[in-house]
Length: 268
Image (cartoon, rainbow, N blue to C red; front, top):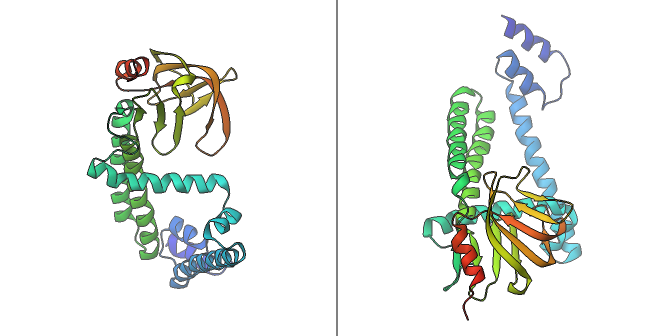
């Protein structure tokens, strides 16, 4: 009876269409058909409007790339590019084809400390997807939430696949490529390396942390195992596009001794 009374109150008050389904969910009643249909129509209208704007800009600029750059901020573009590269890594993971590794290169994995956490997060995401699929009674809301949950599960798996298929790489000439999935990529030429050593640390901070004195920490599983001293500052790009310089780079490798040995003894 309480839900019926709340539904009658909601029906008699002018409430925005995007808020009404939430109120009905809180009241425990099914929202009217015109509400769910109106929300779907609104989403479709927004997508059509965005397509029309991009098409107009494309005709003015002459290319889709310039049109997207004019509308979408750089940070959003980089995040979308990261997701596309991560999803493409799923195919590489299945085919066992690492990215950017050529014959004679040393591929150094770095996913050891985070593998258990990623699979745990994947398990929780699957449980959430199944639970919401059973609990949500409304078809329109169920479809939207199901698509978002399935995409979230694939994205977690894709992020791990990107880290597996994009390892650190040591070239035969001593060039080092430090990476973290599709989010970070730094190439260190051999003449910029002053010293390299195995140095296990447990720094605090985000994935990419830069101190005021130019120490860059690329943290995986709350740890780093290799310290790279440079004889000159190197410029790098953060995951969202900001540029910075580092004189010392600390990162993680599952087998740090093999990586350091390859750096100290490059092939002739």
